[in-house]
Amino acid sequence: LSDIQKKIDYEIRMREGACKLLAACSQRDQALEASKSLLTCNARIMAYMSELQRMKEAQVMQRVARRSSDAGPMDDRSPCKAKVAISDLRIPLMWKDTEYFKNKGELHRCAVFCLLQLGGEIFDTDMVMVDRTLTDICFDNTIVFNEASPGFELRVELYSCCSEEDYSAGSTPRKLASKLSTSLGRSSGKKMRGALEPGACSPTSNGGGAAILLPVPSVPGPKYHLLAHTTLNLSHVQDSFRTHDFTITGNEECSYWLPLYGGVCCRLAAQPHCMTQQMMSGCLRVKLGGEPQGWTNVYGVLKGTNLFCYHQKEDMEANVEPVLTIGINKVSSVILSMPIYAHDIRVIHWMEAFWQQFYDMSQWRQCCDDLMKIELPSPRKPAIVTPKQGSLYHEMGECIQTPFLHIYRGRKRVLSFRFSQNKGQWHHRAIHLDR
Image 1: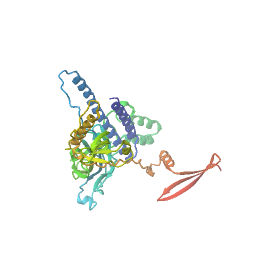
Image 2: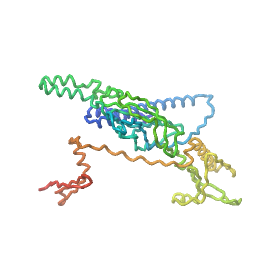
Image 3: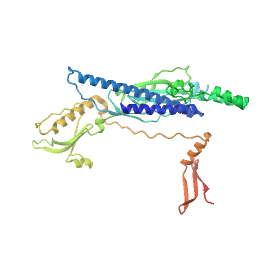
Image 4: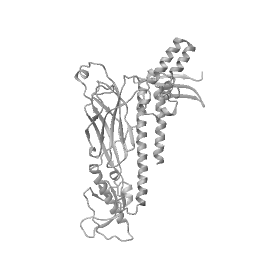
């Protein structure tokens, strides 16, 4: 419970920062990114609170079950977890002929992103700007959920915001106050500015603690709206690119509307732990060949759809080819053909490992036919600073990322060259420190 509470506290602090950033934004792209972060933080807080409530209820049920005198035997066997990955998200658009081919009508642009939730884990994609020049909305992110159960439900939500809307609603009173201050004079303008600018207790202020905890609509700036959604489960997992139905919630009258075709294409893959991890390893006696005297001591490793048999443990660690590989699947059976002695518990452990493996395979079904490939997500690229922002902060950022060549005389630096790149050509400028 403490880990969940720490996650909630962290997201609350992130939300406070997003609110402050959104109120201070003067650029459209900055405001759209801040609003996106705010929506994601709110979604995570709600998911963590639900998870915390479920954990508390589970604890109560466990205490009640332990106190119950008539509680019968319970089957404590549970399926293994899995890594579930969704990638190559493509959402086709259906523009009118006059808009796409003839390029007529008002150019309508929207900022969109996807929010993906599986249990208590929530991830967001990068933001994409969409207009009639695009035929598909493409998200290149690979999103991986590490602790999925066979009954998982992966909800995919598409959010949209019209980029032409007023994204600096919080700064409008300040702009008006600044103009009045200039036209009315310093004394009268200062009083008018104080009346128009939001104070610490104002609903649009981020100075008070209560306003930060309000939902997204109470914060000034651009607003994202749910445009479409779908829910994927185990039956949708396949090691290939598939199309799934999209439930559209908006209409043409909405400012954030985009002409969706009604489907979402993606690749949904899963790797159960029983396919990627060693579920059991140790000494075994197996029968090699058809001779009755063919029993041999081997070091066995149960992993995925195979039981790998090595002469010794060191062969497995050295990646030597196994002397024998026994294939297993969901319909395999294990027959004990030797007596189990009380002092030899290893056979019992192996039998239990086999039954658990068969159970995991039966629950994860097609995911255990072959190991599906999951590509690890690449780290997100930092936001690109546009030249028009031109503040000292951004100039400092450019200098930090610019390569330098320093020349020293003894321990004293006397000359530095700063390199920059323009249209693929490297240029340098000498910066003299000691003349």
